[in-house]
Image (cartoon, rainbow, N blue to C red; front, side, top):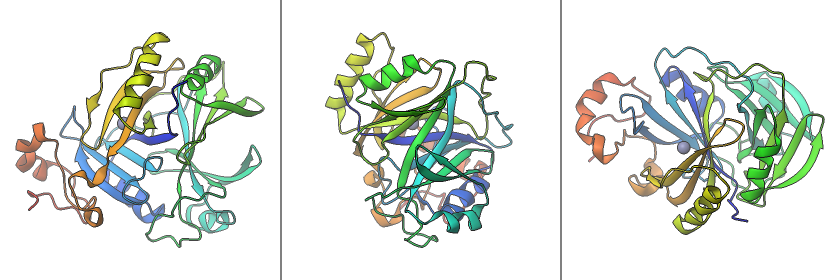
Length: 307
Ligand code: ZN
């Protein structure tokens, strides 16, 4: 067994950057912890939101492709991302967001959509993690991720993979199987079996990949070897500036990443200034004048060369 430490981040596709930014900051109250660009498509932002200084297990990230069509939820994707909120917080959030109250595995939850139709939820749970400081009162504020839900034709191979990563089956409810690990708090992956459903169509509002946390490169290497030994094809480690990442396709079709907790988002900005200036990967630094003109301006983000 080569345990991960729960979720690290969840990355989605979006359309406009401004609407996405406003929703995740002003409505959900997350902190913007980094504004950079997609390594492989530097004319597209990579936006990061989370609690604290971007605590692993709390970080929602997005690639906003301007005017991208909306994707469709279906089978073969991470069909919902859920955040943890304190017990008793749901009425506050229902007033704020609308949405639909549900219960799953004995937990009260509010399911709602983001600006591009993202399937999101808030789950009431006693969670020792620090609340994000922002527009939402601490008694209701998000503590980090609760879970992701994967909707799959056949959950068994993915349950086995999660077992290799250290998760244990906690229980079942209807077509849902809950996998849990004792990790950073973002400890749950729910698997829903849906053999007949339509395939997901990945575009704006879809989750692009789900990243799991490991403490360091040594743990990542060990897991990478175990994955390769089990027949998966993880990439070599890739330096993503704020973490080192490997990627591989999980059996149900969802792209998985395993990301190191260090160096973190304070690598190139002071902790109190996170997310207030456009940061560029070294290989794209020369594009700054063009990007400062072409990228959608965001409130509170300096586009020119940082001092
Ligand atoms: Zn990622």
